[in-house]
Length: 153
Image 1 (cartoon, rainbow, N blue to C red):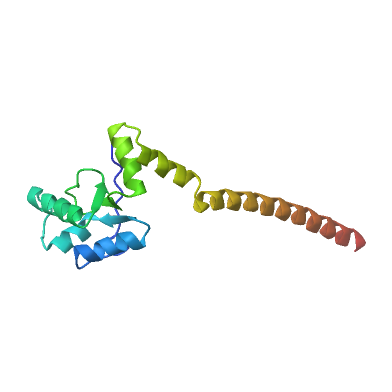
Image 2: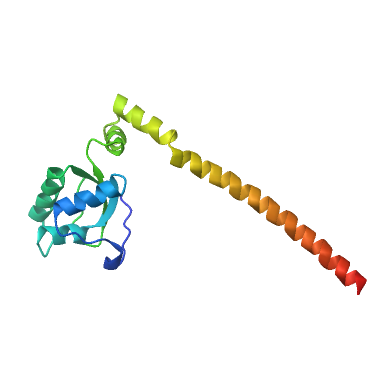
């Protein structure tokens, strides 16, 4: 089952060419969420009919992009996630789709689990928890000061 998230057209970037789209995907770590209307606009068509969807899929493949979901939706307000074919993301997605365990998928998952981003997220959570504890301590101290001031009056 695919979750449909509809957003305003202003929230998706616009592209003039397939190469421009490919460059945007590369700049965003090899993964980019794009509205179907943006892909339709690059193709120069007004509607997302079957042949237009086939054309879009072909053009995506020509610039080395694949997408989720595997079949492009015909609704211009739906979004797809584009990713570089042959990338680490592609290895994981292909393994999930086919149910196979490949060396590429294993390497991609290992890289994900050992990435600085994953460790940074864990460290950030620990720092936030520590800060929350300190804030609680400061609030207790302030309450003590307020009580002492109230008693002194």
